[in-house]
Structure formats: structure tokens, C-alpha cells
Image (cartoon, rainbow, N blue to C red):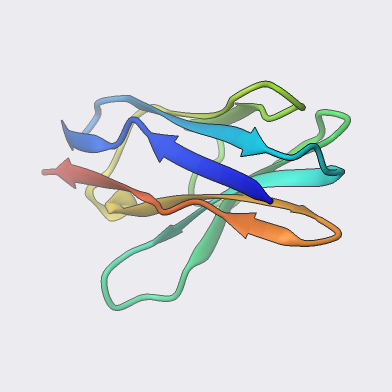
Length: 114
């Protein structure tokens, strides 16, 4: 079993920055991709960024140039550096690990005020 625990969310003004963390614990399993998702009130959960086991990254168009995903290799924490935050970035952010199975964290709230 794999456990994912996110932290680092909070309230920030527009234009500010936050760094989210996702700590992975539990049994050693093969993880091919780690990712950050978010879900705003009344909206579907959406993909924010992914990082593969070899370090390849991808981003949603809405966050390109503002967010950076890093880490996530075995034993290392996954991060999401978020800069130039906008009110529309307000959401619960979730960490996901996928390989043969998928695992989700419990989420951390990010609120960006205008």
C-alpha cells in the first residue's frame, strides 16, 4: 500500500506563490508517473502537471510558465511550485501516483484572493 500526504496549501493573494508537497510512504511499488490534479468547487477534477519516472514533465496550458513540478522519485517528495497565482487557481490540489495501480492523497486547499 502507498500513502500520499499533501501539504503546503493555504491562502495567498493574487500574484503570490505557494509550494505544495506530496510525501510518499508505504511499500515500495513501481510508480511510472506522479501528478498534481486540482478540483475547484462545482468543477471536475483536472490535471495540472505530471512528471515521469525519468523526469519528463507536462503541464496544463492554464499553468504553463507559472507552475513547476519536481521530485517524486522513490524516497523523494513531489513538489509543485506555484508562482503568479490567480484567483482561478483556487481549488483543492491532489497528488496522484500511478503504476500498476493508482494512489491519491487527501488533498490540500489552495485559495487565491483577488
